[in-house]
Image 1 (tube, one colour):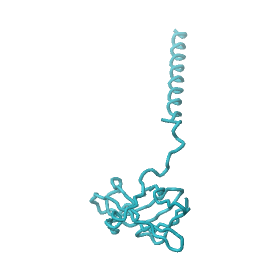
Image 2: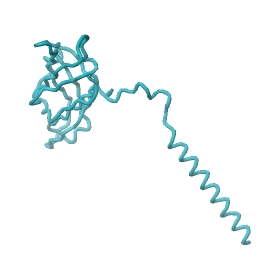
Image 3: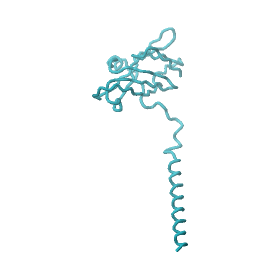
Image 4: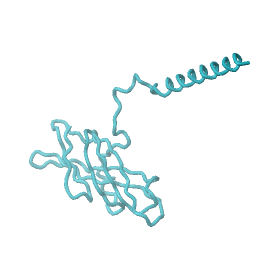
Length: 156
């Protein structure tokens, strides 16, 4: 009887180890290791250069709390009345580029779609891909974002 119990315990231990190794193998594999070279870290939203959409976008829907550029990514934090901001959608529109003293500048603004009806004032971050704003013959452009106190320099 002792040997039978010992054999069952060894079987359970062996199966547990096999199951654990199987789980580790599953968790350590990524979906597609071969296609990770050209992943854009800010591919959530692209900037749309459209003077028409820029002009049609009201600037009073939300407040731009902060904005930073990291590589080709623009992270903008906006605040507006709502519940928690989890359903908000955002677009970033830029007017046609203007050149002054050799520096290209885009007037731009964030447009959010906010259908939340609450009395809270949440802030939400949105990330935009700035590569559409690159201008041939230049290695930087200035972003003048409605609601932001200072311009941002996008260097590429």
